[in-house]
Image 1 (cartoon, one colour):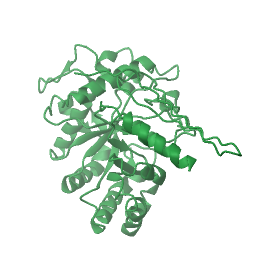
Image 2 (image 1 turned 120 degrees about the horizontal axis):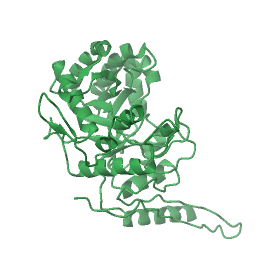
Image 3 (image 1 turned 90 degrees about the horizontal axis):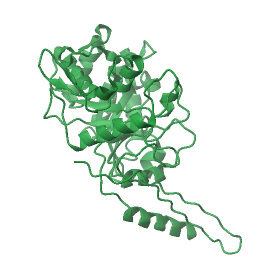
Image 4 (image 1 turned 90 degrees about the vertical axis):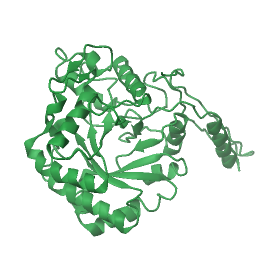
Length: 377
């Protein structure tokens, strides 16, 4: 009875504290860590931020169950390690039946990403598995009557580009065209987007002396002009998006939308990772959020509102690689903000303790604020 009472109190508090400001972006919810809050607590945190879109890297049933009836849209992921197996239509259908069908009536699953950054990755065999697996997953959705609710795509790194500036000269690397061309045809036929993971930070990390950091952080700067179109770019992210559009156009496709499946800035790095600071991370994401609130498009596609998933919700302490990889989060695992984003949110904490005689439950709800409420505009 006391546990039920505590749960009811939590729900009452969570409803009364729902924020009025939406971030206007999706969020990547990575879980390569051993100290993250439970999915049920995360669902309340995201509700307080009015985040309505979440991207996972798997199809974690605990997360999908915790977010039931929240009206949050989910992108779920199929890991690279499953691509070879999922070329088999029967295996793809079993995966959908196990990972999607049990949850979709209550949790809004809208997309499946088949693999992540396969092209340019360390396994030279994976690219040949990618499109067959995407097609098998799509056909399974058709067979099960879910293709109108869930689309299929994959996320690419910007390593697929051989030319990114000027944006109008954007082109894909020759060795990847054989894979990208039919993938674009698949997207056009199935009305699904082309996803890219874009990190302007990497440009600064690789050449801090010659890349003006203001251009990367959406701060005031002189910008660059595309000599072919005379379009001015005041930030690198928009130039990168338009370079991808140009590459697609060169392959005969102006009928597929580009979306940003990951972008962010690390708040901490190693000695050889310049610019990875709390200050810069806060500037990048605050300025990015403001532009998304304004519904901006890129210079070459001004009427196409940019669609972005920020990386990431939490710092993930078990990610391999340099220090920056573990420090892209907007939050520390205890729910405190890494920096002020200009919105408020909270992560509930429930503590249960009981005495042998009374079965007394002590309920504690801690509301943690993400900075101050700031009205952008």
